[in-house]
Amino acid sequence: MISLSDLRQFKQQGRKFSCLTCYDASMAQVMERAEIDSILVGDSLGMVIQGHDSTLPVTVADMVYHTAAVRRGNRHAFLMTDLPFLSYANVNDTVANARAVMQAGAQMVKIEGGAWLAESIEVLTRNGVPVCVHLGLTPQSVHVFGGYKVQGKTRAAADQLIADCQAVVAAGAAILLLECVPAKLGKEIAEMFSDIPVIGIGAGADTDGQVLVVQDMLGLNLGHVARFVRNFMQEQSGANAIHDAFKAYHQAVQTAEFPAIEHTFQVEL
Ligand code: KIV
Image (cartoon, rainbow, N blue to C red; front, side):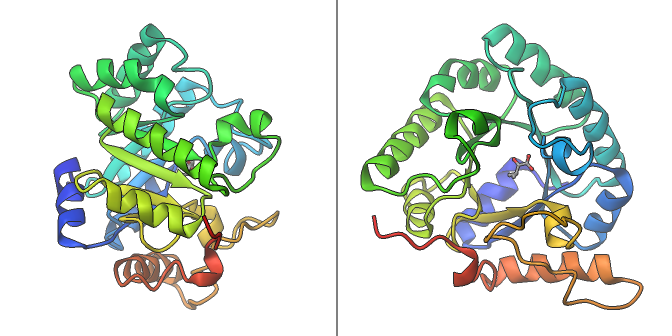
C-alpha cells in the first residue's frame, strides 16, 4: 500500500503521481489494476453521486460510508478522505470526525482553508492523523467566492495564498492540494516546499501530483466541463476502456504530458 512517505519520496525523485476521486469499491478495484497512486474520497460525491449542486449537503456519515467501500476495493492506493462542510469548524468536531473517517480506512484527511486551520492541523497531526490542506478554489466556500472561479490571479492574491500555505505547513500539514490557480503559482508553491507533496487540479503541470474527479475524466459529467479536465475515456475503445483510461491518465501524469497548456490557467503574476 502506498504511504505518505512514498509520496514524499516520489517528490524527491521527481516522479509525478496520479490521484483520482473515487466513491465505490468496483471503481476502486479498476483503479488498483491501473496502478493509480492515490485516491481521494472527495466530498464532490455530493455533486457527482448524490446530484446536489454543491458539496455543502454532504455529511460525515456519507464520507465514512464511501471511504469504507473504496478501501475494501483498493488496498494499493494512498487514500485521502475529505472532511465535509462545517465538520471541522472547531477542534473537538475536527478530532471526532477525523477519527470516524480514519477508522473507515482513510490514511489522511483533507480540509479546506488556510492559516486559520493551524490549531486543528497541529492537534490532528499530534494525534496521528496526517492532514492535506486544500487551498485556492475551495468548493465548500462557493458562496463566499460567489461561484467557482480561478483564485490567486493577482500578485497580492497569490502572495496571500502562499502565506496560507506557509502557515499550514508550519502547523504540520503534510500535503497541499491547489485547485484552480494560475500555472505559475502552482509551480512556485511546489518548488517552495521541498518535502511537501503538492497536488494540483487546474494548477498547471508543475505540481508533484495531479487529481481529477473520476466522472469528469471519464466524460460522465454532462454539465459544465472545467478547462482543466481532459476526457481520457474518449481516447479509448473496447471492453477495458475504463481501465485503459485510468492507465492512460496515470502515464500522462507521470510523463507530465497532462496537464497540457490548454488545461491550465496562464496568468502573469
Ligand atoms: O471533493 C473533491 O473531489 C475535491 C477535488 C476537486 C480535489 O476536493
